[in-house]
Length: 340
Image (cartoon, rainbow, N blue to C red):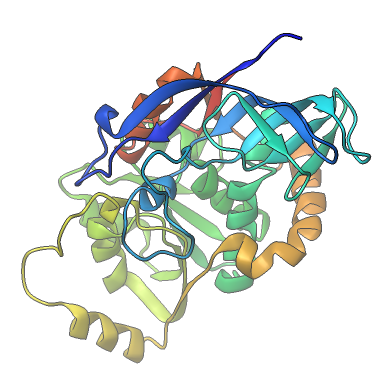
């Protein structure tokens, strides 16, 4: 019987500040035999997402952090290549959470069937998966957008932000995106249908955002934090809602920002504007509503109401460099690694 070699990337050391290639190690081990009640999965696509940076550190988070030498975590789309499990057949595609490796053995727990021949299997890691689900529930359940309101979304061309903006347009809102660079902003307006998009790299970013939101901001979908939030905060309207999804600008920080303590200023603003800020962890808080999301988002995608952009990186060995670039905003669309 042929012995399969599993290539995997593990956490070699914890990063201080921004991750480097030295924090990752590519290694190869033999794949063990499949036992009764198990399936052997061949990873086809691996999702890269900002939350992975938090798992690399020792600081408290909403999920267990990686130990040194653990396989890097990540959502995956795989094919069953051997099954000794009654519920899975060889050749089936599944969505799982098997991490940065070319093969994995599973007892079926946490797997979601994608069928025998899905049209766009990698989309289960993006618009039809966790990022799309995050955008859908965060905006509609926490943001509760109303027709005519102004929505601002940071990281507007990423998989979450792009979906937030398009749902906002479906709900009859004015949508203003924030992205890094003229190309991304033009894409948000021309392809995604945003009413405006502001380049956060511009020297006069705050002034341009204020001009684009001359009636204030009713919903701000927070993915970034930092200077972007600084520009948004003065513009929020009474009763504003802020779904707190991520703070990518702070993931590599090793200390608090320099300067005066502005916590009091923030709290006063939230008080006088009667604004709501709510963090959420998508599957912990909304897992029971995934079927509702999947049905609606599939319909929107099929109808052309929601467009989706992927950036595919070939080869597991290139995952660390791609992930480092993701944290620097170098990706354009949902970042996926094609493993095999």
